[in-house]
Length: 214
Image 1 (cartoon, rainbow, N blue to C red):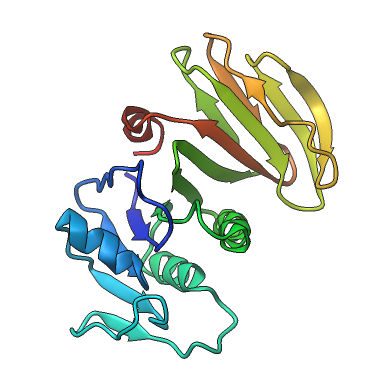
Image 2: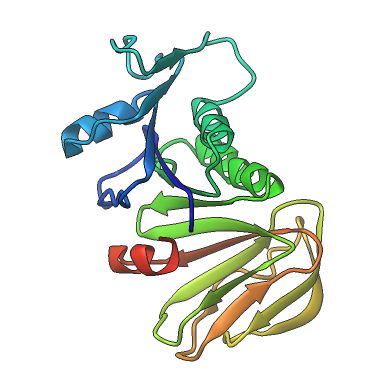
């Protein structure tokens, strides 16, 4: 059974409905607390330096960090999730807004994959995940665009099956965006990598989040 943690950051949530599975551990990363407050959801833990929130929340479930730190607030929240045994981490409020923060969150997905867990960035009508030495599969009812990128120096043994532009035992590198703008074709499909980390992102109505993540 999946051990799910939902983390809510301060990014764009304008087109995203928070889906919190039953029994999931919920963490607010700094000003992500405001998104949770508006949704009427009380987090299990609140983490950050609280520069974005503008104040330190009150309560016994607060972990405050100094602003001068190596980890982003999102990374701090991810480390807390992993320390509590999460193997599936759903991140809301990690897309949109500043490009450097989005890029940092993509690297955070790679960190999660390196810890043997699976992370998802959800928002702005898309889902992003990272797979390491593994596979992600999609049913025949998936439609639209799916893009695949090397999230590291090299990814070897890449297979794209059931997509408009297939690959077989291919080597992808971080300086060649070969996998951008592929398409689902109405048949079962998969993305896999033998050695390395891939970022996989696809457009997803909210109903598909429950189907493919939870």
